[in-house]
Length: 465
Ligand code: HEM
Image (tube, rainbow, N blue to C red; front, top):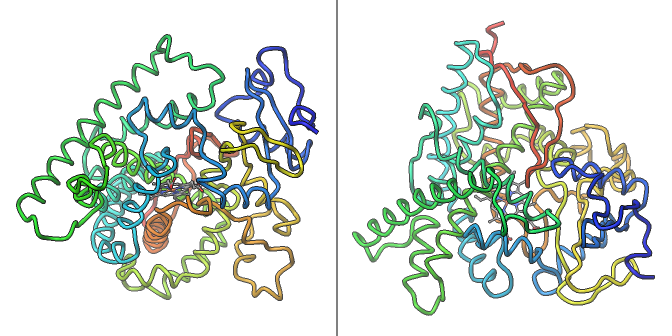
């Protein structure tokens, strides 16, 4: 059997199934087709034939066999390269190994423990921002507020800069960062590389945004160089200093371009992902008020009378909140699909897949299948708390991969979990929450990461009625 013989939706000549997908809902369409065509099917988009897989064993094998067996797509690499963002996320082979080592070291547990007081300070600013919104009875665009928080955190931890966009009125760096993911998403999926021939207004807006980000990052690099020149013997204090130290070491083979690419990568990788994950969890808090109260009782018991987490160890002592977050990330992972290609000819479920074929992995679909999670579509945090023997089987944790897996597992996972728990504990201790947007289901919108489109909320100080 060849790839083209696999089942799959019928397409039109030349365009394939392009007329049947909207890129901001691509994952939903693919999941629908997976329910119909099974764990491995094929689609054609323009000139490309693509394998779509939701079989969990195949997904795990692919994730683990990187970078030697599978890689991110060449399209992603070239698009990231054009944007000067070929950092650790987009790099392959030895380039990736070198960059990955520094990124992992910059985000390790000891660094996070040392960083916690600053994270607590930034969380306090978010709390004051929400108190202000509550006093003014003002609806809050949740993802936007949370992105101010996540960018402040990344800038402080990775670059040693107190950006404080949370307390800065008006436009901030986020308005430039906002432009990157939607275009990255569009360009990595576009059947034709049209922007190399003509530029739409959104492509020109992206160019301006990238220039602004480059200026901003350039300023941070200069500041870090000055700090290091002033005290050359001390250990690098953050990611930027570590990467600058590596650049100074001629053996390392690091280039100036890689500094920008990785600084930009960290800013982007830590912004939407964490903000959207927190936003989805808050969405579920509003949907399940009883569970919100249960999470609140747990936070009260651990933290009162403090208004928030004061010691990073406390973030690991909120099992119900953790279960709630797991369930939220299982049903609303910010990366519901991953795209890779095989480095050499391979096979999936017995079907030959030639080298370079795009393979879309449906991670969320696998994590909602009955054979992996009993009642897979149901939001049920309890499933994460039940002792294994009393679980309504199955409960297959190996399929729960919100941070990816294998050698390219998200290096920001521990930071992200710390941010998520710290913000949510602060929310539980201080605020009541209600939807402020139009009634109805919040839609999933895919723009590289998956976000709750138009999620508006109203904060009330706790107990203020
Ligand atoms: C809830 C928040 C987050 C989620 C759900 C998330 C998810 C992911 C996923 C699914 C991947 C791809 C992994 C793979 O290919 O197997 C990834 C990669 C990555 N993430 Fe995260 N991430 C989050 C937060 C962060 C943060 C806070 C940072 C850093 C500040 C970060 C930095 C990165 C980097 C650098 C990569 C590329 C790793 C590589 O290719 O080797 N992420 N993340």
